[in-house]
Length: 356
Image (cartoon, rainbow, N blue to C red; front, side, top):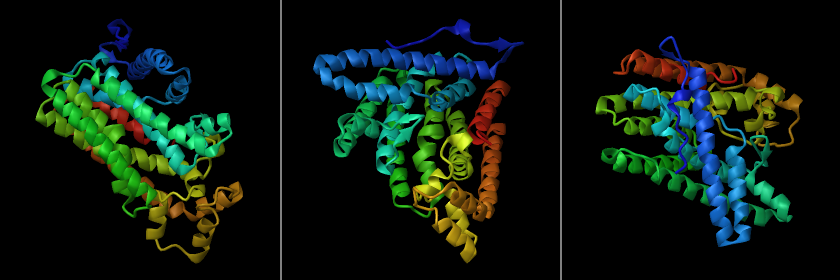
């Protein structure tokens, strides 16, 4: 219903897949699927009530505003590796459903974190609060919009062309992905000390492991291939979030627009966890305390805290490198052909070295 399939647009150079063009092609086709989906959902909402379109519009605006479409790319890359077929078409609707799942999680995450901005625009709950001049109503409508995005994700997933023999596995996996995200979010909210477990559950489950396994199921992959995808995806997912922790802690305004964002929000991320493990000096503890959990901390104070965290930064970067090596070792031992391994290796670089 929402398909955007066209084998002729795939880019092959001297028998090898042009990976940048391949990923761009996936992004464009997923956006087409999502645009068509939202057109239908808007029509349906108006039939329910003219005001119901507001929820759909906010979900649409967030989903279509930016986003790197990393999850559809991981799904397609895993499918390519497991099937040997460079055409990502069988994965696109599942990939699009993962984008809607992400919208759901982002909407609720922004509300829980009291963030007003997402992807260069207003967070959904904030947009509603501004529109209606009522913070509580905005939060309530934001929660509803997130719930709607979750339903949309399930709707598109259930309409995807899953192999009949693997459909039940795919449905079970889609459920497991979400249960793991919720557990990881709980650990995040409670500042649990096991940061790596939190990253594996909250981010890795729906960014790498889940999409990779879904790609394998779409390819009707063997048990050995599925295990290889999992062995690759788990360390990549943790590394992806470690990179995000580094960016959110040390990035400049030019890079992210929010220097020290995790520090100002009092996030117990991997950098802060490593800092406390290193038995810091009282001066360094004081520098972090002036920023951590203080939204109004100055950029100068953030820079001072960043200097205090330099040793923790090195430790996290070393762990990130180890995880990347673990993922590449899993690829080397996998049953995939050379191009399939190369596609996944490129995705590894995309996810773990971005913004560096």
